[in-house]
Image (tube, rainbow, N blue to C red; front, top):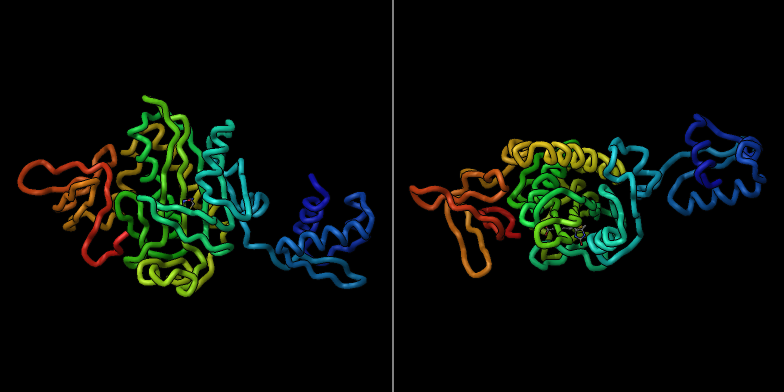
Length: 327
Ligand code: BTN
């Protein structure tokens, strides 16, 4: 363990001021070295009070998803136990795909404070301002065929919804994986994969959640379509704690899915779907399917009823629904 981490550990376990002399002896370094590490911690967002004759006291922590800050909240076995946390990257999905090609294990998580080329579904951009929200990709290596991989987005959608509900929000899911609050989009999921003909090598589930953006932080064209935890609840979300809750929920659903398939999560998904019983229009490459949405099937396809016959299965597309955010 580094001197910095050992120092932080000592400050965390002390419930008042901890003297510089005691810290120096405990860590086996000089008092000047203690002071230098305190300065380093402060530069990383830790608020440390120092009073001559009394020592140091930890007053505040950074709202940054570092290994240490995430680790304080993480209760998973696998997801997030290997973390790649960076200040800026193009897209966390690309970084996770690179890690996958380099042999990174299942459950590896990539988190960035900001993305310079964050992307959404259907080639859209994903606004990724620094320090406000969650931009995260989870690397999975499931035993699935390529056509089955999109089902993982449904699990992620439920996990995001559950994490947002612990912030006191009422959440809806719009197939396949837009997460909405009050008809505005609060989170999106972009699932990408590396596959052979009949086997998935790695799946990257990219998750963007608007946590602490204000309306002014959104690009003008998004202001009436997007929302955040802060806008909806009036409270800032603790980003490391939120990320840990989301990973806990995602891991739990992933384990159940691995054993029982999509049936394990279908009820949790359907309960939050804002499409059931609604008239929908699904735009696909070259065609449009219109009809009454009657849920999803056991493969995660949207079921759209167009007449008296069996509902039509829609496996991909962009859904519009009167009054809702047009993604
Ligand atoms: C969508 O709703 O269109 C999906 C948005 C997905 C955004 C996330 S942010 C983390 C990860 N990295 C990306 O470039 N995109 C996903």
